[in-house]
Image (cartoon, rainbow, N blue to C red; front, top):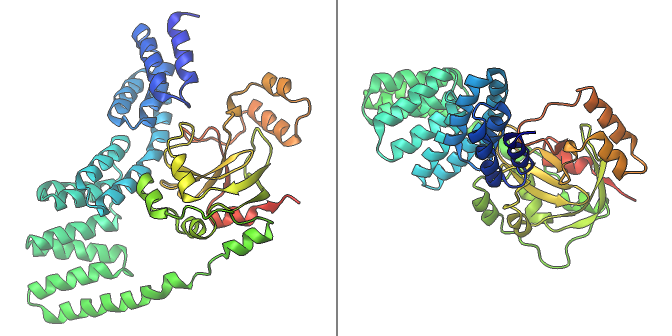
Length: 405
């Protein structure tokens, strides 16, 4: 084994726990062997985990020249971060941090230049900063890459209207209505354009339609039955905390930069800090068995304390603890999903290590190892190697938990 390979191995070992240090080792390895795809691949991953997206893309472009098939797979994995970046950009925009919103959109677009929502949010932020032509270009890109993106046409229509480009505004409002005929905003916008063009009959018709749709939409959110979390935990044999829990959910959301999934937010306000002894199953093969314990649910303060964890993906928060921590995605395509985190990283153990560590091994672990040997385990996105799906939302997670008694 040469020096470059040794440095690569050292860097790879640190990828999960210390990506900044991993970059140091991988960079030294690449100085000795600049065309080594594995080192370049892992440095892309490390840069991405640290949010150093420009450097990640630079390395990824090099990797595409050296190993195009491997690079394509990695690019697809990195595209999973596009939605979380855009979600954070939306939060920054709502908070009035328009320049930071643009920065987060640029990070999303670095990994997927054709992601319409990122172009839309960037356009909205640029419009707030008075960069009208740049904003218009962003909306144009969103409409070009995603011709069915309602928000691209709606926001572009509003921009046209503000600058008295009435013909363009009517065209875009009409396209938005075509895409989402049940949404009131495009009708209201087109009504305003008709009023400016002194076409009162058309303006009134659209205004009435917008008001009608708003009345229809208003009660729909309140009709959904909510789970009684206190009763559910009592049924599982759990207990409330002896000391008042930290219920500052707003501070937690400010710290993570996105709003929590609604169901979990409700749970945290009523049941943060509860504890007990319950079991929950995973929905996929694991190297630690299918059933694992939960002995407590973190309150908002404890969750904030764990945000600096180097082993939890940046789009997740740790919501419960036991022999496996439970994590929830708060952004991205899997927002609201609940996972078990294997902090021992058994996915990287070879078969011999399992045999040496355990005198007796659960059948489910043997099944996992057999599937691994046959390359039949489910594929996982980059960064999710040690996460195992429990549920697609928080209510499903609580529902599938079982009393250990």
